[in-house]
Length: 277
Image 1 (cartoon, rainbow, N blue to C red):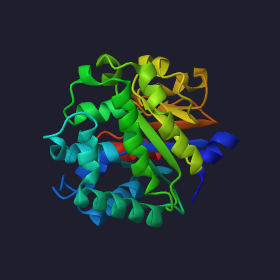
Image 2 (cartoon, rainbow, N blue to C red):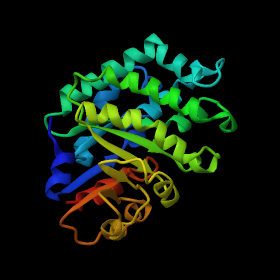
Image 3 (cartoon, one colour):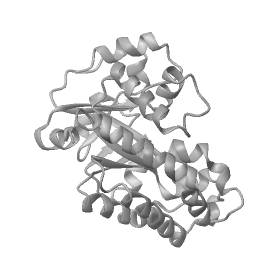
C-alpha cells in the first residue's frame, strides 16, 4: 500500500485528504439508484472522481452505505438494529466487493481507508431513541462493528476513521462511555497496523473524546491557520471558507482535510483543488 498517511505522520509532509462520497455520487454517477448496491459502479465512480481531485486518501464510507440500507433495521431495537444490517447478504456482498475493488485498484497509489460511524451515531441513524443508548448498548455495537472490520484484514487497507457527528454530544449520549466502548475498534486498527483516526465535527466533540487516543484527528470545519495550534496530529483546512474562495496559508507540513461539496459547481471544485499542494 502507498503508506501516505503514515509518511505524513512520521515525516511531516503535506497530505491531501478529501472526503468525496457525495460529490462522486452526484457528479460522476448522476445520483444513480444503484450507487450503493453495485460495487463496481461505486468503486469506479470514486476512482474517476479522484482523477480530478487528486486526494492521497480514498475512503469507503460505511455510514453512507448503512444509511442507504437503514430500512433493514426497521423492525429491530437496540444493537439488533446493527446486527440486522450486518447480516444482510446483499449488503455484505456489496461492502466486500466494493472495498476489495478499491483496495486492488487504488492502494498502490493512494491510501484506502474505511470509515465507520460511531456506535451511537449508527444506532440513531437506524432509528434508535438516543435516550435508550447506554454503555452496554454502545459496547455491544462497537463489538459488532469490530467483527465487521476483521473481514477486511487481508486487504491492503491503510486506516480506520471513526466518525462522530455533533449529534453524538447533543443526543445526551455520554461521550466518555462512547470513547471507552470504541477502544475495541482502536484495538482492531492497531492489530492490523492501520492508522486510527477520529473524524470530529466540532471542538466540543474533540474535548469530549480527548481520552480516546488516535493517530490523527480530522476536523473538517477547522481553518488551516489553526492546524498548528492543535494538540496532536490534526487534519482540516478544507472547510466551507476554502471552497468559497479563501486562500490557504503557506504550509510545509499539514494534513489538508475536508469534504468536497456536492452542490458546488464542479468547475469551481477543479479550480480550488488545482491550487493545493
